[in-house]
Structures are given as structure tokens and as C-alpha cells.
Image (cartoon, rainbow, N blue to C red):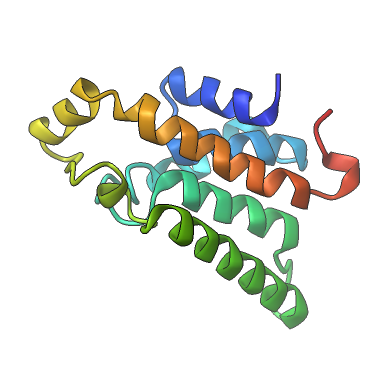
Length: 152
């Protein structure tokens, strides 16, 4: 099973987009899966279901931070490398989807309302929008993993 397939399986099993993306990378980079899942909880639904930056994307940013991020405040080089990689990642998503915002990607659905959640369910947006974006984010980040952590 590919990392993208594992992430989609997590999402299909009830994990948010952010949890699905971050957990598959965190496990491979030495972070406990349960801790990664818990850490990325608040990012779901565009940051606490507010419809802001998509959870799959923010989970991807966490994964990129785990790969490139600085471990101490004095590591400005690591911090800048992470910022550059994240900026490029966000630009690619924006170019492909015209937005990085959960609510926009879900056709205006407000996940805090019953009507918004019904729209997502009735239009199968989890399958049509979220799962492909989860796979896209995972596939974008996977080649950036250090060679010793790449899947398959």
C-alpha cells in the first residue's frame, strides 16, 4: 500500500485530512503515530472546522516541518529552508486548485453547520475533493523525504 493509499484509508476511517496526511509521514520519520494523530487534530476542517487552510495542506506543512524544520532557535538556515519549501508547496497547490482554503475547495460548505456537513455528505465531497487532495499532498511530499525514509 502506498503512503497516499494509507492516508486515504486513515481519512476514510474517520481521521481528518490533516491527521491522515501528517500521520503517514510522522510515523516514517520516527514520531509516534498516536502522538502525530493527536497533534494534527485541530487542523481539520480548515483549522478547527473554520474553513481556513485545508487540513490536508496544513498536515503537509507539518510533515515538511518535520523533514526540514529547525530543532533550535539558532538554526536560521533550517528555518529558512523550511519556509522556502512551504512557500513553494503552497504556491503549487494554489496554482492547481485556485485556493488553499477548505471552504472554497468544498464549494462553500460551512462545516460548523448542519447544512454544510450535509452538502459534503450528499455531494460526496470527502471522496471527490478531500481524498484526491490528500493523495496529491502525500505524493508531493513523499519524494522530499530523506532517502532512508522513503516508502517502497
